[in-house]
Image 1 (tube, one colour):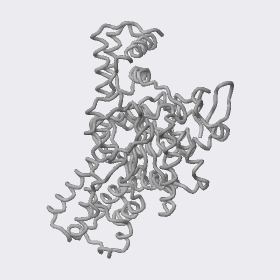
Image 2 (cartoon, rainbow, N blue to C red):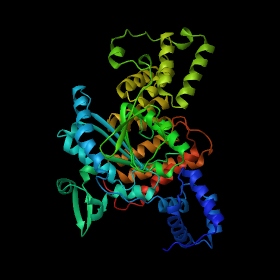
Image 3 (tube, rainbow, N blue to C red):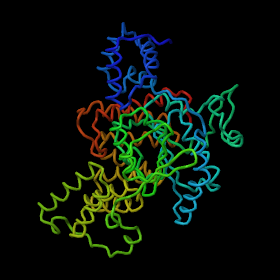
Image 4 (cartoon, rainbow, N blue to C red):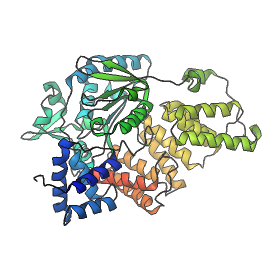
Length: 489
């Protein structure tokens, strides 16, 4: 549809609305795209004019069809497999071989990668193809390959895994033969095996919480966020960079696009390295060793015998300590929270709640096996705590122990059938295991509960998220799966 001129005031207000809800700046060269999207929206949704359309957008939720259509229209980005040859060569020839060798030496067969701004999925699938080349024992590895985007329509296309010949223009012939099947002329589909290694989800880099176990954005080895920051204000870029740093393991890497010009002030916590025609950022850690003791030290240190909290600490002191730990967990200060739990244990506290706090901090620091031990210790002291059962399920998901994770989620829902986060995680687990009808039913259950709850009531297990935001995410996810009639696992 051709671009139609809009009143300057309407264009300004539309740009402001998009910026407030997503952090995206609509640049001058994108104005024609905005105008075409608005013209299409007027016809599609039956609005009489741009003023009525703007009013509808203001009144609508961020997950409404009008808002979804607008965001999809202005965030359509052309991508293709193995884009940015310099970075792909570095990943193939240097980063992956070195990391894989180190993990084998550590007997830790795991890799965690996040494509933030994954669009139609070509970037994440390219990484999955590289891994199949590098890992002859691929099935023995615990791979976490996550792609997120703000465009639900693009995510549906990523799930579908069907691409034009143009998207494969830089794909090596060996990869094309191994991972693609030609469906019809100039249309190719990704193999089911490759799709089974990746996971796509809706995530708004401005509004949603990360790092978080709920969004699967903790303890990452690599984040790719290429050609996304060109749309963001510098203040939002700085905040996202800070959160990216918290998502990465010490020494983890962040790849940006060639167009992502960032201020040097946003590089706090990263060291900048130049490639031949590109660059990468490597995370540094500022946490003192005492905050996060090595696992071996944990295993050899004499264990403190279990004590009842009220016997170990005066009630007022215990309450003050727990209030501080809760605050630290709420603002996702995982290392500080872990240090606080360690201090409480040294004072003789070994309660179920403290072990739960400790498990949450450890899990969000990527120390899943230690977190599982702490969670089991919490449940040994209080087997009826729904939050510990839910936390245990999340940890088991991180360890790819899917049947056990499902059992813990069902135990959580037995204790509280209205536990919205548990319904949501059960839905994602069922999708992952190929049970799409059950997954959609669980996701709809979660949405019903979220919509009935008080909108601004905070979720216990999701930092910074209330029921209104949870409902919006669920609507995005449902639209993503339901719009993909070709989805299959």
